[in-house]
Image 1 (cartoon, rainbow, N blue to C red):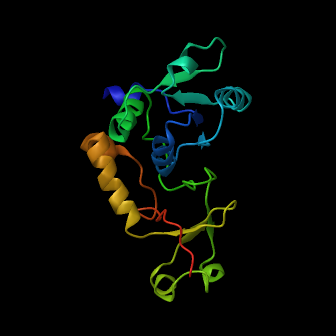
Image 2 (cartoon, rainbow, N blue to C red):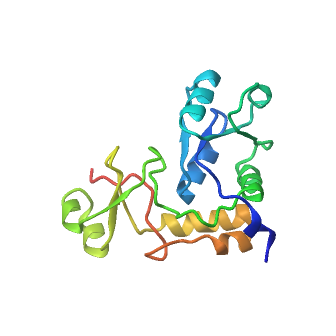
Length: 183
């Protein structure tokens, strides 16, 4: 057995304002990560406490505050290093990629193909069978080129072994996470 199998799963998290890109990529992987770029330290800690979230932070001051709210200190500046650090401490392989809206952090829902007619380009409608939608912002998602690029980016950031163990779900590549609205 590999060491990664003994890591705890990544719990729901609250990311501080310095970790927006990390929050986005963790959401892409399927992690529940709340993030607001404008949130104060006090509000972040209160939210994490009220919602039973682990605080992801680069702020040493937050790490040193008294209290029982769990915190994880991210020590790196660059996204690949940040993601690798989280992956070294938590098992990311149980997450379901492309299952959350990367903007809203809300689980997306599979919707009938017919409901997107006129909301997406005709080519997309004709070539795709499965669509998901964010129930909060209304963004539509479908299998496209974004998942393959995201997988390749993750392979570079996390390494081949971990990227291969991530469950990419059905359909094989998941759904595109670009905002898709017909202009």
